[in-house]
Image 1 (spheres, rainbow, N blue to C red):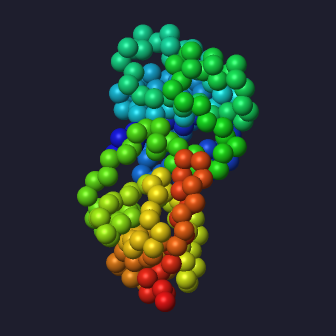
Image 2 (spheres, rainbow, N blue to C red):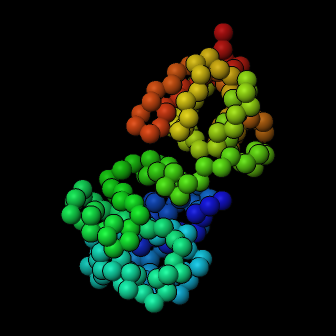
Image 3 (cartoon, rainbow, N blue to C red):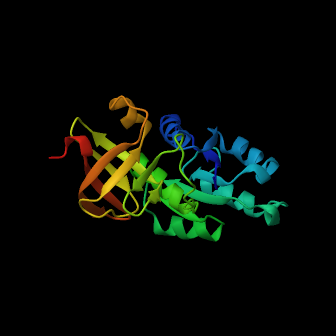
Length: 218
């Protein structure tokens, strides 16, 4: 998996805990720091092991912009291969421009839904390769053309339907298999769940897909 090792630097412990939990659930390894100076020292010493830095801009000890400036002046700057994504509570155009000038690669608002943010991090890190699925991976298989879609997020489900987000649109009335541990546990089976696509709704960069369980279909 590309972009697996993440350094998260944010003095807000509640936000850090939620974001860390969601990223770890998706397979990322997270090293989090409340104090940016400690995070900066870690990055400088372990830069070869870092794929992504998630950096809060508003911190009292050392601001995100000051953090970026310190990295830019580091003697190891030419060896840095990681990407940097800054996080902020406000949409400040000057702050965004300054962040990019100091080396940031992306800018996300902390007000975004955490699940959407995680999806955007996946896209940002270009984690788009679709390996051959096995029973330990979560995937959607479009049975007619055996197209494997890994990047999906179950939104909700009940005894009749399942609703999920994906980056790829699925044909209406197509038959799919969903390999999701939570769904398999709910349906009390070890096999992927067969469904029929009822509706696809494009929302920004993602698609909201509503499916009906095949064993519930008329």
